[in-house]
Length: 237
Image (cartoon, rainbow, N blue to C red; front, side, top):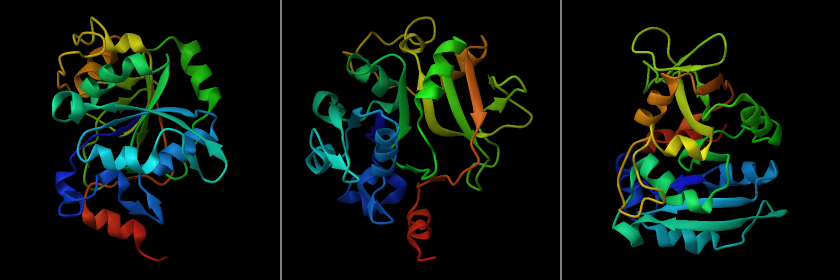
């Protein structure tokens, strides 16, 4: 699943007429980078959730785009604006899309640039064998998030750490559907009521039970949250 429903308020006025994930980075839409990386890893069935200017995204990619000139993707859309009038936040959007997803499944944000990240079947196999409900990739804290999000134990567990060393959540993760059911998530399956809910509280509850693993990713990574960060990525080297 590639998350693409956000309004991109901090990117205005760029996002007044273009959905943030379609803003170009180095010659192609920002969200196309994780889509191509997933396809390169053999994950060719994608779900895109959309809301703000979502018809621009579905109109651009269609149902079976050939990205990178080689691998054809099969795309399903979870149109939160059509169904509920707006975005459902991360957890609400994931639960809404669960009927379209396998188990386990990847989630990556369409507004994060991580050109070196590799999605592998081996990572999925390790995740399944580990018996956790989620596996997160954390990154060193950027200047705009100096306090980080989650801790990381020596044993590879993500920690709901109020104090001490923390890393930033990259937005890239592997998940089991069971994370989005009681006792961690109270949203009914498929989210028929369009409940808006963030992901972090669900992850923190599972972390408290030792059910979220993690690792540190140190490759290039940018949360493209401002026009300045977008311009920096597109500045000629």
